[in-house]
Length: 360
Image 1 (cartoon, rainbow, N blue to C red):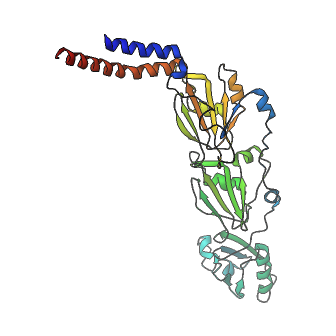
Image 2 (cartoon, one colour):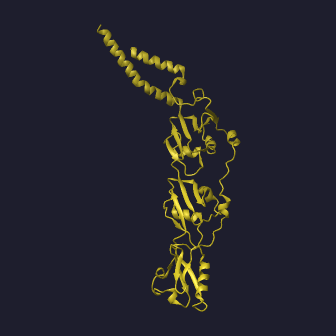
Image 3 (tube, rainbow, N blue to C red):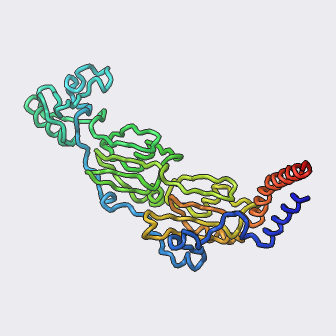
């Protein structure tokens, strides 16, 4: 009887004192964090007062670049045709494959051709080499008609690294290569790639490109230059953490820079309809130097489906913590569940105390 009385007294006292006495999660600006954290309500007025985020644009120097004619380099294979002179065109025999009759541009940039000897082909365009061979062959062949074609490319490379499916170097050819073509050939690892940060390194300078924005501006064509390097960033360092009373608490990565609060909650399965509180949807945004700049806690009152119209216009950032608190009844239920083992402990103590008294 004593144990039941003690337990009943504890429960009654807590019930009278209200939910403030219950152990629960709630945001308070009166503790040690006061002065280091500011609270902001997500309202239509506040959203309207925020500056419009400008869409990322492609650097104009990339858009203005026009590819130059392909220049021959070491490692290229050339097929040189001299019309009406098969002994020069196909010395290995006309029945052989084209590669058997092709000429290799050696590591020093030269190639050998009958009657002409060594020609410094590296750095020339196909048309410049054709004219050079024509001029030199004139001494041996009357009015030579010469044609030059690149059969294998081995000198001008585009390097790819990062979150691509295939990172093999791609060859620059006589047909200009665009950024979209290079990315399409390489393939994107959509699970781990950060589409908002493709880094194109050219002539010692890094250009950051948002592939999501670029796909919307299909008319903008970026040509690649031999020697360019493409690095597609990974998204493992860009996460938002959705915790608390949601169906699937988790850390979720950004595939682009554009994730709304609605999308974050949706990917977590939404609010738990039984345990969550419509008053306790928070986005906690930290800062690097808390001593000089306060962190911000944004609060959304999710009382009705209409509130998600506000959430759909609030953009979360990498590093944000989206936290959904428990309802008052959920906190109370959890508190009572903690009292059950306490009641058993009190009962055991009372029984033990009664047994001791009876033995005196």
